[in-house]
Structure formats: structure tokens, C-alpha cells
Image (cartoon, rainbow, N blue to C red; front, side):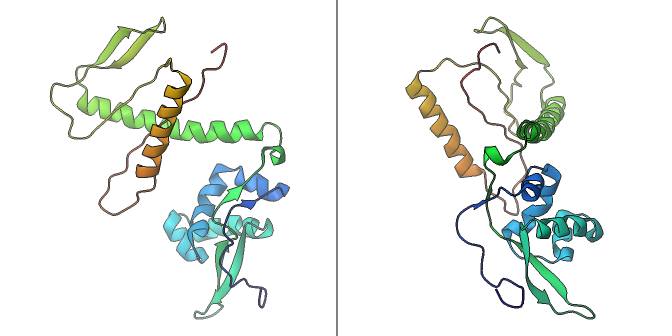
Length: 215
């Protein structure tokens, strides 16, 4: 630490957070979205605001809270005409919040809110794709679970834009469940972090868990 600034890169490994103010921010989906650029590298208010496409004035409020909570820090001052601009960076590239540090009810609210955002994005995208590509309409078949399986009538010609959706209950041995889990994790590892020019954005939802009793 020199002159109040950190010139050292963030330490390797996760940063465990238990402080109430920091936990409160990290459990806020709006706040974590604004934190993301600083977890990837150094930014001034202006450059981070440009990445996030938000006004620098509104981002300043959250940056001040992040600094007070010890989540981001000022690494240096960038010279410019007039007053030098602070350059910020998150204190780590990965944060861990132990469950016993999360206030009662906040964990469920955080997880539900995150899932709800992604679920809404996914269902709206599927609906738009269905309107464009699945003119045959809906397909209903008897489900092995005793209910009815809903889907779309597949078009005769292959889709120019791939769309897949499947929801259901599987019956698996422990070995089969482990194999499927590894397959899904492999797909995420292979395709999950590809952010390059020329690629189109897709929404993908993957999940596997033992069915809870009573559901």
C-alpha cells in the first residue's frame, strides 16, 4: 500500500465476505451487475459507466458504497485536465459469501430473484422463437410421470437458428445421474465463457437435482 492506493494485483483465490454492508451489496443483483467491470480489471467511473451503459453520476453512488464496504479500492489516480480521476478495481476477482453470513430470508430472495430474471429472459426468447419458427403450434403427449408433456410441433425443415426446450422428471441410477451431471458441467465449461466478436447471444438454462418430496 502506498499513498493510500494499492498497486498490487488482487490476491489469487476467493475473497470471503462476512461484513454486513459487503454482504448486503453482494446479495443485491443490481449492485453485483455494476460491480462486474471492476472485478475484471481497472476502471474509472467513466469507463465503467460506458461498459455498463449507465450514467456515471448514478454509478458513483454504488462505487462509493463498494469502497466503504471494502469490495473495491482505488488503485491509482489517472491524470487529466483539472482534478485527477480515481481508478478503481475490485479487491478480488471472486467473492464468497458464507451462508451463515446471509441474513434470514435474503438467500431465498437473492436466488429467486436471479432465477426469475433469467427465467423471464429465457421464456420470452423461446416465445419469440416459437412465433417465428414453430408455426405448427403446440404438441401435447402423455407423460411417463402421469401428466401431460407440452412441446412444439417440430418443423419439417431444420431451423436456421437452433432452439431447444425440455422440462421433465428423469428416473436415473446414481451412476447415470453422476454421468449426466458431468455432461452438463462439461457443456458449461466448454461454452459458458465464450464472449467474442461475431458470436450471437443465446439463452441457455441447465439444471439437475433430486426431486424434492411433495413436488
